[in-house]
Length: 552
Image 1 (cartoon, rainbow, N blue to C red):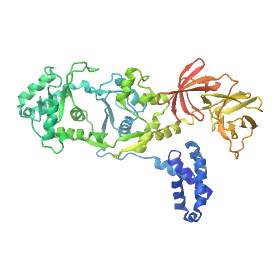
Image 2 (image 1 turned 45 degrees about the horizontal axis):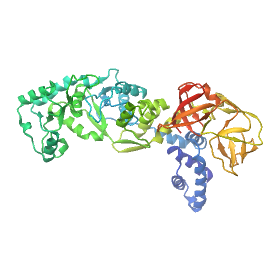
Image 3 (image 1 turned 60 degrees about the horizontal axis):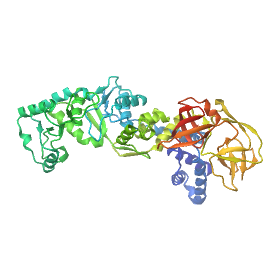
Image 4 (image 1 turned 180 degrees about the vertical axis):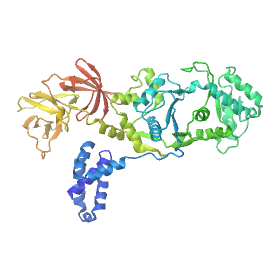
């Protein structure tokens, strides 16, 4: 019974981010060995014992043990992990896709999903991927950030996304949009409306046509020229498309195509004042740039409907439009507008502050771009609403960095204790438990140590790689595998230790002491602080080191 429980408990843990479920393991065992139902209490006890042991291991340790006792189950898991994206319709003639961020700030972890899916498809079909900065004028609530023009391509390149080198900016294409807006007006499919916003909403809700809708083509062309040539004030006029004020969907009734904005644009300043809305600029660009497939969120369904309406008017073929479900990442809060305010106010250190969850911050913390790609490819392209725990990203990244990260002791909020009955010792501790050839850290100890743990009376403890003690008295050096001693990390109070600060994802700082071996690290080196987590050296000063926390 013990062997079968162990292998299925390991398999369940590996499948679920290192945490096995007792009910799932019992169901699996009974499914393969129904006779064990007669010993259900014994089975429950055995499963509970196995899970307590297995869940204390790292995923790497779990995978290693599973490969030793049931390699076929590990192979089965790896096959399940290897997902491929579904085939794109009409992709046999080559594809052209686009990544089209609005430059309100740096791309964050949530933005990376669609970018990676587009990149994978363009590679899959040996197609082209365009980076188009969708910098039509922003709103007061969502303005353009000048920094984003550098941060966006920088983040995409770090992710390994291969877009065409020539970046396209919508702010360079206003004259093109004006040309096709006039064509819609000439076809009597668009008109300049002077009704205020409140009247527009009221008419749309009631399905009432305003008097502006029936103005002749010549007047509409003249009024649109006035909008372009700065002869209309902001809010006084908009260009609307004629979809029909009786359309079943009130949101689709005579939607706005152009509006006037007097804000200064980061690239073109105040050269233009009449700016297109999203669906019009994309209707034009998707055709002129030869886009064959568009992947966008389901929240843009109405914009897709609007694009198709415009393509039909202009007798243009429609690209393949694919709508994906909303992706949410459980365990973190992402707000680009909040991040911008905090960056501009100085509350955040910059766009790479860990609280922004930007691609720049993930890089600085020590995430590998491959881990982000693997996570999102495991989700694939789906119309379902998906919620992914942030721990799933941690798991993917841990698998990549675990082997390369040496181990060190960091004592947070150190407390000095004295152990009686011990002598001076010299000990060598491996830099990595699985790779002894990597080398060792050397310690010289006396009877005084720094620890983080709160010790309990009558409980046995073991200093990792050193000795056992109880009630601050030395017991023995030998490690007894059957002994219930709690493992804790330590530092010798007699050595020249280093002051450590660790910047956490929430912006708080944890302080403590680190072993002297850390002084040899270089800026950018990534290590694991035992029983604390993975960290990356960000700043090195005399007598102190500042790390950024990656994850546990």
